[in-house]
Length: 193
Ligand code: IMP
Image 1 (cartoon, protein in one colour):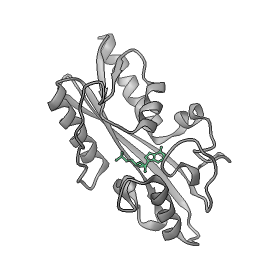
Image 2 (cartoon, rainbow, N blue to C red; image 1 turned 45 degrees about the vertical axis):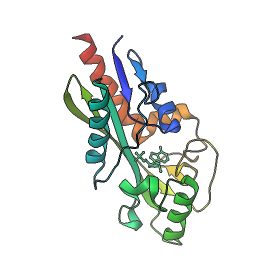
Image 3 (cartoon, rainbow, N blue to C red; image 1 turned 180 degrees about the horizontal axis):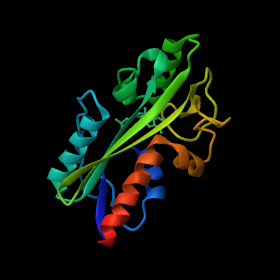
């Protein structure tokens, strides 16, 4: 079976992606014994995803994909965006979420979207897949599933937050779910030929 490395150490993300990808052997960074922190110094999701995928590809020589994702809040001019993981200053999901609520204060426009960009390096060629999920930021946390900003993110068309919805539903509608599905379709074609 073909191998594919997921360039992430985020347990929540890895769990979500494993649910979606079949037909290839998925390896984590731990499986390939990659222990370094990869910097994400850029201003776009695409550049950060490419930086992560390239670093792992150079290290392992294997096919690899990296995703970079974040929450873009309209009333905050698209912030936290690429800074979603360390909006508060460090990687702390709870503090990051509280900072968004504080900054939003009583803003009327609560609209936001999650965006995910996957960079796939497959047989030395580079491909990108993108997914967006639109919704609203509510005032108080609800639910304890998911991760990150999920307890305050209410996806359009649903009455439960991403932290209340079962993972199977989140994966059908989420930014990452959509981007991963596009990549899976692409890989199915590649694996057939
Ligand atoms: P990355 O690891 O640089 O891609 O950072 C992604 C960050 O965006 C996470 O640490 C979360 O703060 C946020 N994020 C991305 N996707 C999700 C999601 O599905 N739920 C909640 N937060 C997310």
